[in-house]
Structure formats: structure tokens, C-alpha cells
Image (cartoon, rainbow, N blue to C red):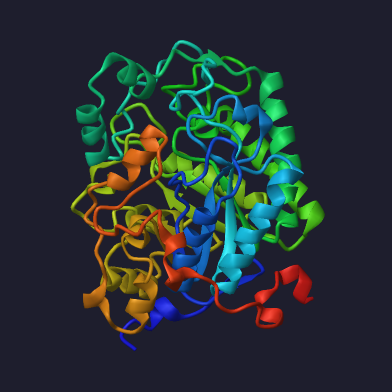
Length: 422
């Protein structure tokens, strides 16, 4: 086999992945504003599970009632027992499809997101307004939106971020308490792993960024203080999860560094990595800081723009590292062989071709439908509409394709959650 390293199993925490390909967490909004699971969500993930991914990370999932007030898109929710049956069905379906089900949990948005409820957005500090397009990550998607949103109402609704108010310390504690309690629901739903969303300029990540955090209390100023909310949040959620399942696999997704000037640096992230590692995480999932450095933008012609960060972070991390943005199978194989990363997670590449891992394993790389990095899939996210793909017209319509139906039931203990196999 030409790509042997990519198809070696790896144990992350208590979970064994059959290969080094993972499905990165992405939101393409097949659900409505009720936050309930849909048949299309399940079919979408089953397509990628059957396509050969060793792990499918579901997310991001909004998991606090506090956060619902500030929702900017129709997120899937995991805030009460009513959401568990659908989430459990999804976990089961991914498992029957041949992959390990992980779930990424997000407590709330920040001032980057315009709440559709009309509520004033929250931020670490008041008075620092988030400008539309300043994250610069989605490239062509932002250009499509600017051309599409010509009228005043649409521009106001979708391209302007209101001035935020400062989140209070009582609200921060409320967010921690709700997120910790509701993380237990992911254990109940049968997921093999839980990933904490700590990135992408939502509220936790904004506390790290000196451009948004102007606080003068213990949560602002020094690097230690700016990390404090993330560390307190992560410690509480991890402890809550492990009360229910001591061997649950838990990871974090964290921004690496911000482009331009004034944001957090890679050295800042290395320091945070040490703090989070002390809390007992099982893996690290590399991501961008906003604005991203040019080679990590989503429409960058370069491949593997996240790998330099993972290489550096592996110097301070003792846990496996997952890295997105590696489109080429040849580069992915090299990255695993050279030890630059341990798992390559695929987002838009699996949108374009759910069968990518299977095709690589079968040495059919010429048959892969390649992502063109046009970012049409992200236009729907910005407009609160279902995602679509320019090269895969079935994206978002998988439930109508008989190839993605689960024609086999459980095939014994291997198909059951880890805790039920003991």
C-alpha cells in the first residue's frame, strides 16, 4: 500500500482510531432554529464515516442555555435531555458507519457573532466592535457575500456586528456551570470523545486576545490572567466529564497565532498548551487565530498551512496532535511519517469527496474529487442557510442517496460504545 503511515491505527486516550484520517468539526446548518438533530445531519456524517474517516468530530454543538441567547446561526444544541436521543442516534450511526464518534462542545459565541435574537453581543470588554471580514479566513466566501448582500437590511443583518457589552464574572461562572453540567449529556449520548471548542474568536478565545480583552480584573492584562477563563472553564468541564466516565477521551481545539499585530502569539499558545495539558487532556487539535497568517487562510494556494504550528506545538505537548488543512494525500503521508502530526483532519476536502480516505487507502488518488477552496460551503454559514459545495452537488442532500443508508445493523460488541463493551 502506497500510504501505509496514514492507515496505521493510533490510540488517543482510551479510543483506538483505525487510521490517521479524521473528519474535522464543521457546521453546515442542516437543522432549524430549534437545535434538534435532523435526518440530513445524520446522513451527512454517515457519508463521511462510511468514506473511511477514522474519527468523525461532530460540531460545534452549542451546549449552554446562556449561549442560546447569543446564537448567530441555527446551531445544534445539547443543553437538555430532549437533545440526547438525536445526538445518540448520530453517535450510533457514525459508529455503524465504521468511524469513532467524537463531539465538539461550544459554550457561547462572542462579539464576532451577531445574535439573531437581537441581544447585544458579549465580549471580554465593552467598546471593542468586531468588524465584518476582519477574521479574513474565509476568503472567497466573504467576497461572494459582499456581492450578494446589496440592500441595507441584508447588510445590517449579516455584515455588521453591534458594539458588545462586557460579560460579567457572574455570567462567566454561569457559563462554566452550565457547560460542565451539560457536557455529561455527551457521555450519556454515547460519544467516544469530547472536544472543547476554545478557538475562532468566540468568547473563550477572545479572552486570550489583547485586542479584545481590556479588562483590569484577574481575567485581563497579563498572559496568565488572559488565559484564566479558558483554564477555569476547561478544568471544570473536564472534571465534570470524568465524574461520569473517568476514561473519556477529551481534547481541545485551540488557535495557534494571530496574523497582523497585537493578537496572541505562538509562544502564548505554547504556554497555554502546558496549562491545558496539566488538566489531563488526551489530544490537541491545531487551529488558526484571527486573522490567520496568509498560508493558513482557507483560500490559500498553499497546502498544509497548519503543519508548522503543529510541529512547534509537538515540542511542548506529550499528547497526540490533530492537524487540519492538509489536502494532499502525499503531504498527509509525509506529515505522519515525519512525526509533524499524528492525525490529519479533513473539513472541506470531505465536503467535496466523502470517500477521500477510502480512495487513498485503495491508491485511487486520481479519482478524488478535489476541493477547489472556493469556500462556497461557508457562504451558507454566514447567511444561516444550509451549506452547499461547488464540486459536490450531493452535499446537504445525502439523505436522498441510497449509498449513504445504513443497510447493516450493529455487528456485535465492536459497534457498541466503549463503556458498554467492558
